Length: 584
Image 1: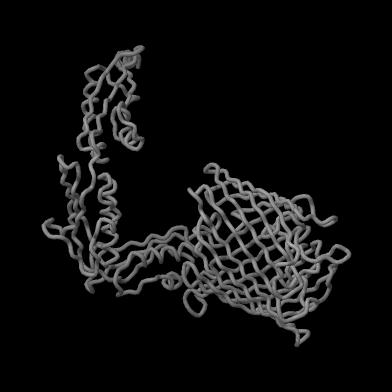
Image 2: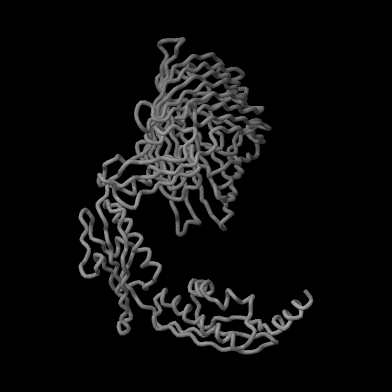
């Protein structure tokens, strides 16, 4: 052991540590690529034993670095080196002369023999623009490689998933300083979807998966249908991963066998939570969920919430693919008690509905609901038994659910009410909500606006339960005012509610850094007795500001709102609100 140590000492003593400097190049992307490709950098912690060893390492490194320059379109690049001794450390300087950056002058797609331009049945011409290239731009290798990937994707969309790029051709014109690029492709056979095998299922029935397969066996192969199927399955929350692949050759029917590898997620979940809110005070939540009832993705859940203001218990059932594909059936039983300044209300509710997502932007639902409401400690006490037909329609072009930065939404909610105690009493409550998001400059500044219009027609005000009437003052409208009190008041400072309402909100969303943002806002609103909104009535106003902390799942929100038309003995000086996601 002592002999081994003695033999190793000369090796360590003879090692020549060195530092590296790249000179003459300012492009950070190319410098990073050179650092990643350089053996001088990778082996810096293992210095050579001699100056000749270092020079050999430098000479071996330069060809790799020249490849990096060519990958970025610098075909006349040159690199020289110099080694100096400074303070017992060798300083290695690499002098880089990049020369002119060559431009991409053409891009063509040939058949696999590289002699004839490709004309693929059912496929549009493969223009550079279609493949993601712009002629006249720098001839970057990464763009040319990505064009080949896009080419294979386009061929797959035409029904040729077994296509391959056989050869890449680059012609460099040193006089014109440009590059002519081409791909030689073998499209392979036209493929149709074949039989599918599924592996990895445990508790989920195979027919549940098969119902969500967008393509049909025997249909022309489409990667978009494969991707849509994968998204549908992942969005069910039943699976942690879904991998869909295909065979490498057609079967005897001329079809392409499909393979699906699935990993199931946990189907049962129990969660407990605690919170404190300026409106609710301390509270707790409980949820139990079974997402795979009977192995068909049916959901049964039990929810409870307990606080000073609100007490509820809900049993809900959801059945996907009800009667037809992509039709969701919901059934819900709920008991709730709400104790706020405006009223105390006990509500018993049973509802069921069907919901259909028409496409990525549109979804609608219709239901039938029976509810018993007992209202006390209010400006309009009473007991009501109502049959309701709720309808919901939404059109959404916003780019994100929790942090939208562009697009708009329109939501229309008509609810038809019929009293089961007084047969002649019936009315309709309508609410129209629209939001829009306008990016200004970069994504760091977004102007967001929302307008809400409400109307109740067909019955006198006293025949309508107070919780059904319009009341302003929440985190969704007129922030800063006492919760659900903005409306005409009685002599005891209790709100009557209204049959019409208008609420307007404007927010300026500034993202200061990747993690922090601020949101100054202004809210306006009016609630009146008339069936239609009265724009000449008193308008309430509030202003405030919010802080946003952006996480991987969405922004955390904290707002403080100040009522500008504060009512004595009703409204606080300010209100604080906290939640996940933007206000709207």
